[in-house]
Image (cartoon, rainbow, N blue to C red):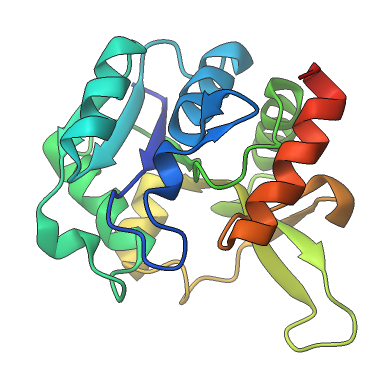
Length: 199
């Protein structure tokens, strides 16, 4: 199993309740993540959704994604994404060379984006590659935008945290890169999707 997609989609979000279930231009955010992973052609049927929420797990099942009922301990605010990823990897006995993390809260990504990011990851020979937007007036200069993160399994098992790595950067344009945390973020993403897809 060379490459898998992992979609971390907890149900108990605080700032924007149930955000992973919210329909953005008619399609729930978690469904968008599953469908774009399928459309990319990168993962085959190796798309895993991790959630403690039965509603999300039911949707994942209906969309044909594999899914794991996450321990609620791994769904608290202070849990790092790496811990959720390691939980999924352990359940499949680490039987993959690399993985891609797709946050449902980044609905503007396209299948072509994923193919281009993956191509950059492989051709540059990186252990980890994250998408980011440039923020020149702040430190750090780059901010991970949630579109995608590709990583070798063996690299994560060495560091056990994405924060301790020095990943390569794949630049995303700010106007096409939204990581939804607030109602305002959601409204902006939905407006862009309506222009792109029609109402």
